[in-house]
Length: 216
Image 1 (tube, rainbow, N blue to C red):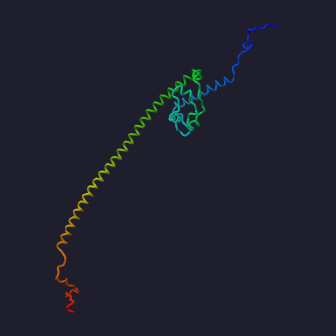
Image 2 (cartoon, one colour; image 1 turned 45 degrees about the vertical axis):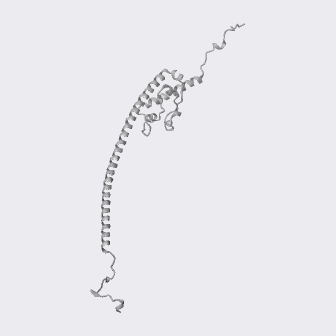
Image 3 (cartoon, rainbow, N blue to C red; image 1 turned 90 degrees about the vertical axis):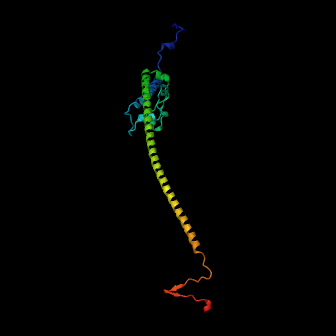
């Protein structure tokens, strides 16, 4: 008769097989992190460009969706990108911080890439500031030129206004003088006196006396 030790566990005598699904998930998680790391690395490469020649790195940085910390990297996903960028990049999902910590080599590479992204972002801010200052200087120069033109036009308008005012004053004085002359002429001429003989009519160069009604 076979003796069996009641304290023994038959199940522990069998080798524990690691689930295939777990290995598959781990591999998928590692690939997801590697994909995100590859995108960050490509941003740091100035040669990364689309078929149109437009810098993919510049468009990613302008979208303000690039992670600049480990925490942002873990929560970063392709769903946070605009449609145009999402169509040009492979799909990637958020990952757990423990998953990233479980791959020390990837973690170190991600830290290095994020530091590069931070440095690149600082440089872009400086360049953007310089470009803005240059743009404002150009706008100020254009505004000063317009002000100079307007000042010249205003000075010309004041000159024309003074000339027109002088002309109005001259015409006013002339009108007043003509009025005085008309009043003097009217006062000197006066109405016809009673008993005066009417003016003689002239016809064909001869003086013809007018006939009174009593003489007929």
